[in-house]
Image (cartoon, rainbow, N blue to C red; front, side, top):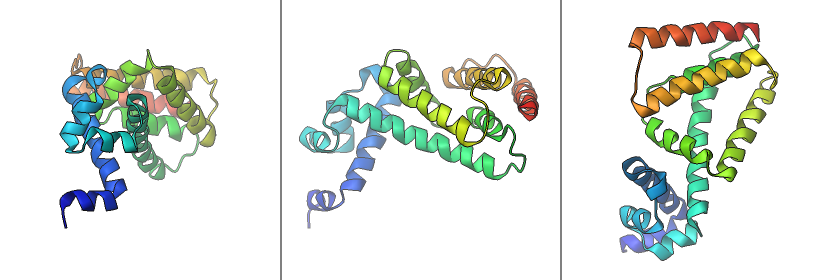
Length: 185
């Protein structure tokens, strides 16, 4: 049985390989240089095979964004499960997740920059964030909550760009300070 035949019988594996390849291309070349040809080549799939799963570049980018959001969500859920104080725990988990030295940082950074020009991605992020805040019983209009999440985004952006202006201890102190603020939410 040829490898090609096996791939046809396992569409989810092919889809995952295409998303993984899209992520690698994005990390290596940036989201602006992501092309269907490069992704197909990296995945070892024909361009037609890629288009079967993702009919356009935007469909591929949106699916990759959803995949990253799932990873981000899993980190957050893990922190929430460890937190017995319901008040402010989503924002605490958000701070802890954005402060993780993740391998996805560069990829998430590419998508953060893309959100400034891509209304669909920006809407997906905003809708996800708003739904999570509400789901966990926090006030979406809380100034403290928003300031803490904005500061966490800054920590994450610094991590993504590699421009660490703080020592590791200073960064940990900032994270701890932000987490302490969440107990007032």
